[in-house]
Length: 519
Ligand code: AMP
Image (tube, rainbow, N blue to C red; front, top):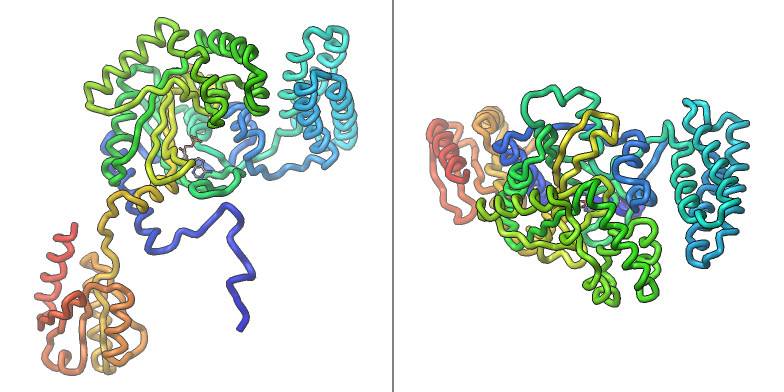
């Protein structure tokens, strides 16, 4: 026999969530909805794909997410231009490593030639002048930097970031996260005019081209919440964290740890980053190639390193807590006071910087047990500048995203599984005379909120009861000719085979009270 299962398979990094697991997922998501709404958060549904620039601008062009992991569609760029852009970043990496900038300049020239051709064929530059402006800027930087070898490193970085935006107009990407979308929707719909803080939550799939492994998928699911508005009071951060902690408790994920940190604001963070960069340059030779590269591109990310040989060096690096400005220090101190007052256990982790560019001040992460290396089940933080960065009014913001795949995995591997009611009644009817009664009572039981299975075709009782058992029904409702004649039903509890003869009224009463008892 042909194996039909082999012809089409779910794409690598995606998977089906099947029953009975899907019931656990629904319960998990419904628990979030109920809890978040009790904190006065409201559901927001944004599109699964957005303008690529939205993510480039908010998440950050230097991040792995934007650089390597987004699924982009509608990219009409010729392979020539795409290749020239790719060569640009490759030759930059080589130049940094070898301290020889010449190969980089060569690839800048090739890139400019590829742009020229793309303009000539009207492949780019038609939608507004952004592409042309970027192109002219790169040309100017190229000719200036050629005369001034001192500044080549900054010039190269600027060229890379400009080159990354050329041709991106009109390009769409599947969302790798949803905070940027929520901020976009907030601005587009003028939500700053709404009374009070705008408290939103979302549930849905996200997409990142990561290397699939346990707890890491290319389509994965997040439950997130965001508070946007005029206030950045630490009590808002504390309430968001309280909601998160209560959620994990409610879904039975008790073996979790909440880590908090403050990464400062746009005043104090850049100063700290410079101090860190200086120190990292001193120890550069002792670091691996990834961390070495990040000294230039994003020194904070070095603190994320999990390499065992780098840990002792990182432990001695300057810490952000010693470099926070007075306002940030006070904000963080107040947050910790609030957490203590609310009885929320947390650990401070000065290395928690989060990967995305838009975070300011409070950052946090929750880890859970039983997940191996992918043990973060939630990440979040404050992003006070994000709305403005996207062209909106000055707005404060804070939020988090829970990774449902991992959280559910952790519940399955050691948490407390909820009792999810499945099939309540299997209607075992036999004889054509019994069929109308079976149809009638099935509809009644379903109206009463019970899950009922009615076989479409007549079956022998023995087979019927066997199927009821296999389907995991709690009861079999037996309707044969005797029952029809007597106007009664026989209800058999499958766990212990106890049988009762009941009238329709008694049956409904009994099953409804049983359902209420199960919650
Ligand atoms: P992030 O914004 O990257 O910190 O993501 C927030 C949470 O989403 C993480 O703590 C993970 O639980 C989850 N997450 C992120 N990426 C993936 C992925 N590729 N597969 C499964 N879960 C993910």
